Length: 441
Image (tube, rainbow, N blue to C red; front, top):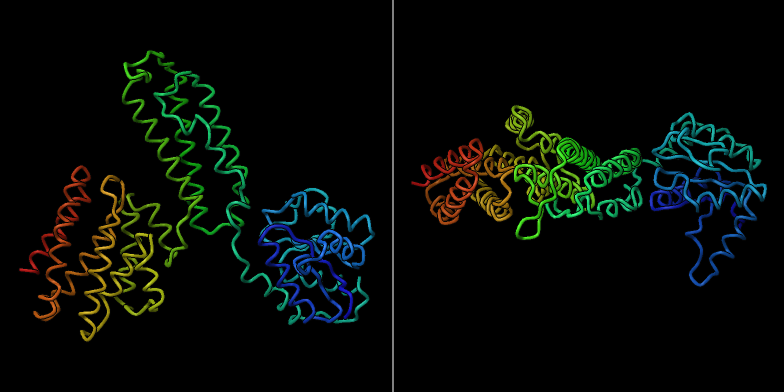
């Protein structure tokens, strides 16, 4: 068996995924492009001995650089070892501009994943290995296919110390239990954290899915709001550190409420980053989630989809429909209800009604009645869809579903009562309840 001519150096999961695909595709361009990665070392072999043996015998070193391994010790170690051995080195960057490459790697010829750059890389690789081959479009396309389905990077690789930044009194201790009353230190802690998050945003954008990036940006905004509130009130008014009978600080209740609400928002957004929801089925779900409570914005997104589904009720495949039903995203679940409501024909009406009722029960059981800022619009759309189909159904079908339908109206009334301080949400739910009760009479 021929000795590998190209040693591929990698660090972290995405870099490894690219390395394994290059191991498959490079020999298909030319058999002389024979790659090797340390992931190929057999079990039981002395890992470092085998690695150093391959590094010494290599003719070319190819370094896979991603945002999460850029400048890390291991990728620099391998690059330095090969450089000292006189091996020609190529850097291949993914989701990163050439100019952002850090450390010793910046000294090597660096290739971006564009057609022009990849063609130049293949020509230079062939010249270095003494291979006579005319690089054409098919070769470049084969190499470009390596980067089509690169997995997203785990958050732990993109920002390893994220959660540890919030294990400090600034974020963990209630404001009225900060007996030291060192407001400047607390404010400084929030600003320091904010600066670190902003410095890491580029890596998050390059490696995380869009909804995690949005959650990350929301977290940054929440910390900024929390810091501004502390700077605007605690540092300027310098409240006295008088103690209450229960041992807490006797601060102005409105001040405590405002700061604690912002501190809670920081933790809520942090959880959405470190334990993110799955990718939404509909990309519009990101926009809707952000603007659901902004007048006209959230409802505009929903109305656009409503019109689209009314025109083409078979828009979603059965697989997508099932994913929408189970999705935690409000808009996805609303799309599920609208799709079933607009589907033509009555042959499967009973089945669709049962699906809607089951999904509504799941929605109602999942709504946290102690979270008045929660969105109830998906459930409201589901109630509308249920009512629309019940009105079309024969009396026998309606009678079979009446028990669960009345159970749903009871839940709707209870939820409307809980949201009584939010007039729009409460009125929306009461309207849906009245329509459904009228249909069931």
